Structures are given as structure tokens and as C-alpha cells.
Picture (cartoon, rainbow, N blue to C red):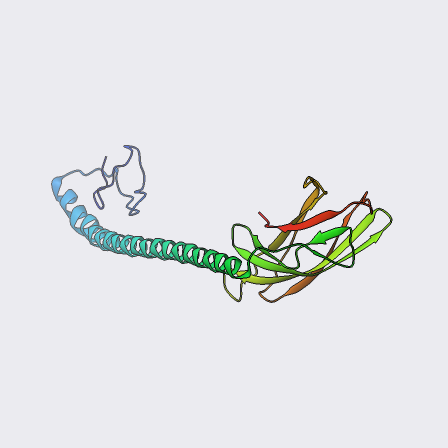
Length: 218
């Protein structure tokens, strides 16, 4: 059956309309005059109210649809801006590489382990970046302790971003074979923040020469 107010399809045994709330479906009349009076006094006013509520519902649905459309466009634009920032930043990195030329390993106080004087690290597919400086190496017996300063230089969210920053490293022997590698990351760092970290390598042979390389974190 259909609701006489909002015309919603309902089960035949329904006691109340689930849309407009009308609840006088199963009335019986002894004559047509009583039926017409019921229609005039009860159904007609409910129809007016029901139609008003229906129009309000339609208007509200339209507003919500428009709001969702605007939100979708805003999110799309945000993603486009993020991609543009990443693209421009990659161009800047390429320019820096071409200006600075190829980095050459330099010897620190330790002649056993060589490392680039400065390393620029890209994290999480260019969501953040950092620089590695002040690398210090101390070898005791067969254990090498390497400390360095990590400075956050870029966040795709801007100056107020707190995207995690990470760095990986590799230690290669004289033949260029990676004999040790690992990575670590730091939380809630702002652009310009600096953190000190120490890593250790074991079974180092003081008569051999190794190369330490910092690598992008992903």
C-alpha cells in the first residue's frame, strides 16, 4: 500500500509511515460522509505538513550534495598543490646537484671509514627532507661509533608541518659490497629542528677501509 500523505510504498500491515509518520492506515467507515470528513479533517492537513517537510528534505539534500561537491573539489585542488610542491622541490634538488657537482668521500679523524661531507636526504617520497652534517667517527677495538646531526629542511605541509623525518645508511667494504645497512626515523620535527644520533658498526678491521653512505628513507 501507499501512504496517502507522502505516497511512500509500505507493507500492507504497516501501522505507521516510516517517512512522514502518518499512522491512520486501517480505519473503517460506515458511510462515505464519515470518510470524506476524515479526509478533510485529518488527511488534508497532514498532507500540507508532509509536503512542507518533503520540500525541506529536498532542499537540505541539495545543500548537502553541493557541500560534498565543493569538498571534493577542494581535496582535489589540495592534492594538485601537493604534487606541484613535490615537483618543484625535485627541480630544486636537481639544480643543487648540478651546481655542487659530485660529492667525493673525504677522510675524517678516522682513516678507516670515509663518508660524504654532507648528505641531503629525501624521506617518504619527498614528504620531508633533512641534511646530515657533523659526522664524527670513533673506533674502539672492532667497534665503530658514528654520530651525526640531522637537520630537517623541508615539510610538504609547510613551516608548521610535523611530518616524520627518516634517514638510512649503508656501510660498504673496499670492494663496494654492503656489509651493514639500517635506517631510523624521528617524530614531530619542525623545519630547522636538529637532532643528534649515533649508530654503531661491529667487526670493523682497522687495516681495511670502508665507505659510509647516507641514503633516502622510504
